[in-house]
Amino acid sequence: MSLRPAVLETLARLGVDAATLDLLSTLRRAGPPYRLTASAVAAQSLVSAGAISQRVARAEREGLVRRERSDADGRLSYVRLTPVGHALIERSVDGLLRHEEALLSPLTGEQRGQLSEQLKVLLASLSPYPGHLHNERRGHPQSYPPCPAVAAC
Image (cartoon, rainbow, N blue to C red; front, side, top):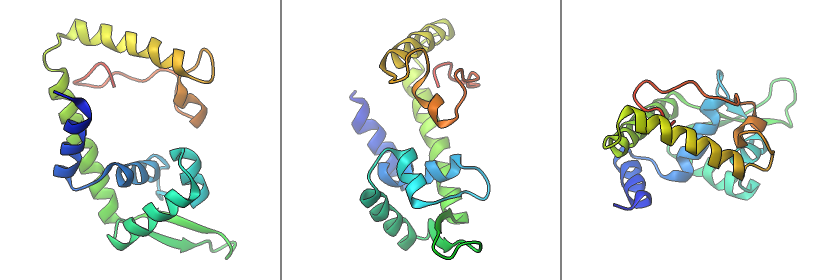
């Protein structure tokens, strides 16, 4: 089984594509009120401002996000996750976690722990920040708490 087609199939079944998932996930990680400027979304998603503009426009047409002006500075606008978008991202994350659990089901708990440790080493070696996990620069902790069902999050 190839992983990429299986993930894309899971996303399609959940009713979301990878680009929209990235946008909604970025806004969800921002925490309440689940809003960021478009430039902040672009910086955190590591894609161009043009790509973010297209993603936001499509998600806005689907009712997943809305653009809103800042009350303090009318020149500043935000992209905010709507209740429909929030429900979709929560449902999608749950579905993806179930998919990943199924992928890891052949492994024992001990094997999952070993895989988790090996993936941490690999991720750290790929990081542009030696000795740190790639996402730490975005404010995520260097070590992650174990997932309840899956040791390799």
